[in-house]
Image (cartoon, one colour):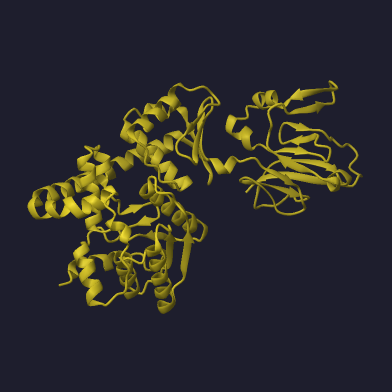
Length: 440
């Protein structure tokens, strides 16, 4: 018989997000189909998001059932196809799944990303942490909320899901990869968990009690982490964060780890689960490395050390850039260049300069700094090192990577905001163009 207490508890949770924009990660399996049915019965119409990893034909069958549900229920379905090799498949698939979900959510004003993790999934996770003798923070297990991720089924058993699906005649397609015992979780689910449930119920109770205690402990710790964020985070943009090197005053490794995990998730929308050793190495790097040194948090997220601060950023953000300035749409990282627009209240003006319309129309480009760049100094009739000018003007090692260098059609540096201006016109009767560098 379907456990209505569990269902009512979930429906109460769903009622709290009724007015929000919802993205549901759907696999075509019974768990996500069950969650979709609960959403629809609560008058919540989510956007569906399916990822086809192409491990076998079964994945295509599950995609088809998701398309069928989308058509019948008149619900939008976003379908992504990716290819992963078999090495560390589960880990890669999980990372890619959350990267794609978060990316879509952030680009489309989604309030919540729902996944159908349930109580049995939580038990498996907690038991694996128990086997690994993991630290207490790991016993948080699968978190109900994590930034935009929301898992409303963590108190619902697999038994209840199956019974509900059968009673309500839901259509789903089982993922046969779940039967692959080469994966640790699958082997645990098939071999150990049934025995633990039947013969060691006190262990099950212990694991869930530990989980509850750790959640309480974590909630208290979050208050302290928020204090650290105010104390050490000096600047936060959409694409990067600037953090004081004094953060090494957080000597407790768990607090240090949570501090950075919050920044990575909140600003860069990246869920980073490194080993204990990796977090220790990050701490040592901040404490002992030289200015200009770089640390790889993962394949996408980097940390760059400066004198008083360090910067955490997505490597794609500071890729080399080169644009031709036009009259409109001159985006430069998180800034812009405006032409003949000096009083736009939507922007914060950093610096402006004038150049002749003739020079502008022959072509003006903006690129990143290159080692060895020099600019002409009219007073001394010589060329000066831009690297030294950056140091003199206290441009940080991170800002240096994205600082705009403006060149004419002959590839000569003509303007470096707040540092250098080749054309200082005194006769304003000429036909001039005003180029302004602004923050969005």
